[in-house]
Every structure is written in structure tokens, then in C-alpha cells.
Length: 302
Image 1 (cartoon, rainbow, N blue to C red):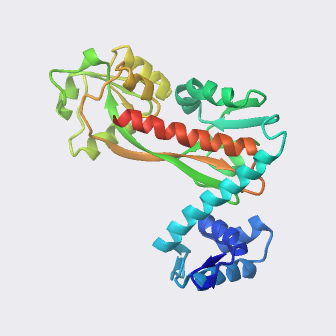
Image 2 (image 1 turned 180 degrees about the vertical axis):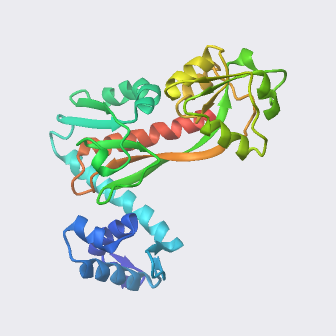
Image 3 (image 1 turned 45 degrees about the vertical axis):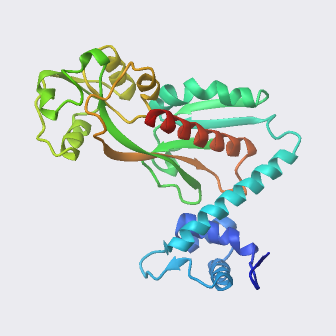
């Protein structure tokens, strides 16, 4: 392939993709079953062909340049398209099975209600869903794809960010005091619902620059699903991320009494084997989840 008057070394793209994703040439070499010097040569040859660096000078760790980040995204999309197209050539592409793991709250609140749409696309696919909260490779079950929260300890695997989470208070419409948006000090007159020991609410108060208010009552539950269910029932105010409570926000079972005040709280990612080992069904599932997440965000923002 030519760029201007120079040839682009296509065989170097896979080495660059692994290095850019892992930010470690040794791990990239292990993933591709090559030597570290071979990976280094591939990256350097690609940089020479492009006439600009793809990694910044940094003795402590690899850092992509802006040009490197842009190229990495394009290369990853291209490799995915090639892998998906090759998979579709096979007659039995989706006549096999797919196993997925996900955090229990994400699985029950977001994934399961949308899952029939994916299953309808591939009627011959055997599907397994395993709830898990693993935050490193050794904690995950042996599955084709894993959805993980706020974790990145997966050397040798392909990790793709799905969405950043912005947290904010929610309540039933009839629980709003006065006219929204409310003020943080209004919470002294309500019940706060906690899915932890109070840390998430404390972070919200800090994020909006308000002193933490002692509410009329505190209720502590075991997770997001229970907290949102109590909020929908009008018991009090919970914290949501817009993903778990997307349906309730869309149908106005829950509202945001403080308007757009939010704070960042991690992200969801999907973990699969590297491209040469990922199954066609896992590629299709990854693409579908990405599209569904985008639609959730679009509806939430509209």
C-alpha cells in the first residue's frame, strides 16, 4: 500500500496495534509470538514510512503521540473489519456458542433487557451469561467476552472502553422538593439511599462543592439495583450513572432533581482475547454492545 511516494509496511500494523493498545513492547511481542526486537523494528519502520513519531520520548513508559492515537484507532477499526469479514465467510460463523460475563447489576439492569435484540440477530447461537465482578484476568471466568467495571488488569487481552460513567442523584417525580433543580442543602429533609457505606454520596457533595448534609434518614442496601428500585418506589434519593437507570429515566419513573450536576465515576470496558483468537460471535457481541451503549447515551441526553 502506498502513501504518497512511500510504501506503507502493512505487516507492521499488527505490531503497532498491539504495542499501542498494551503500551508495552514486551507484552505485545508475547501476544504476537514475536521477539521484542521484531516488534520494535515494525514500529520504527512504520514511523519511517509515515515520517513522524507514533510514540513520545519517555524513558519510564510508552506514550502514544496524538498522531499515534489517531492511527491506532483507525488500525483497530480496520483489523476488526477484516476479522469480521473473514469470519462471515465461514458457513458456521454463528452456529456455535458465545459465553459472556458481566457485573450482576449491569447484567440485570442493562444487558438482559436488551439481550433479546442480540439473540434475534443470531437464532442459532447458544448463549451463556455469567454474573461476575472480576477486576483482573485471574478473577474472570473462561468466557469469550467479559464486561468489567473500572478495571484494566488484563495483560495480553484486548480491552475496549465502552463508556465513562457520570453519577448523579435520582428520585421519583413526586419526591422532588419544590421546583427542580433543588439545592444540595435540601437533602437534609429527605431519605438518602446508599449502595455502599456512604462514599458515593460523599463524592457527589464534594463534586458540587457543597458541605455534606445529614439527611432525615439513611437507608443502606446491597447494590445499585436495590437502590434504584427503592428510589422508583418513592422511598428516597439514590445515585445513578445513567446506564443502570436508563430505562427508568427514559420513562420518567426517575428524574434528576439537581439538573446536570454530576461527577465522574470510572467506566465500563469489554475484554476479549486478541484479534487472532477472538471468536466471530464475540466480535459481533462487542459491536452490538458498543452500538447499544451509544443508543443509551443518546436517549439519555435527548
